[in-house]
Structures are given as structure tokens and as C-alpha cells.
Image (tube, rainbow, N blue to C red; front, side, top):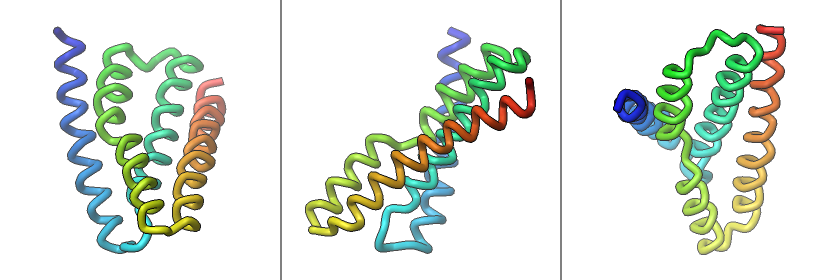
Length: 125
């Protein structure tokens, strides 16, 4: 029951952050769904940083990991939105945006995971 409460509270926070940050970004860049790209890259970095900090530093509690990684980041990151937006770009015939969007999410997201691990390694090893 405690885990469900932690995930629920974290999820509410993550959803609010996604709505707020994503909306702010999208109002400033209208032709490319960069809001989802930014959110996915930031979420990938934070997930990696927390998980590797737990592994290397050992101080990150299980409760915090459940709250932050499953709750906050689970609601904050947006894979299903990424898929929908990518398909929508294809439907509109925007092939270059489609390739840049998927490539950016995959390459930058993967790079963010590696960066989070490196950061945790520098902090805790």
C-alpha cells in the first residue's frame, strides 16, 4: 500500500511537471514536437542518475526510487506521446522532422542515460 501511495503522489507531480514544462516549451516551438524530446531526454538523464546513484552511492532509499523513478518520471516521460507524434509527422509527410524527432529521442535519450551514469560515477565512486 505504501508503494502505491508513493507512486500515486509521484505520478501526480510528474504529470503536473510534464503538463507545465511541455506546454511552456511547445508554446515557443510550434513546428516540431520538441517538448516531448526535451522531456524524454531529461527524464532519461534523471532516471539514470538516480538508479546509478543508488548503485554507486548506496544512499538512495528504495522508497525514494519508487516515488521518483516509477511515480514522478513514469508520469513525466512520454513514450506513448512520442510514438503518436512521430506517426503524426509521417501522416503530414514531414519525413525530415520524423527522422530528426525519432533520432533525437533515441540518440539524445540514450546519451542522457550514459551521462546520468557518468555523473553518478563521478559523484559516488
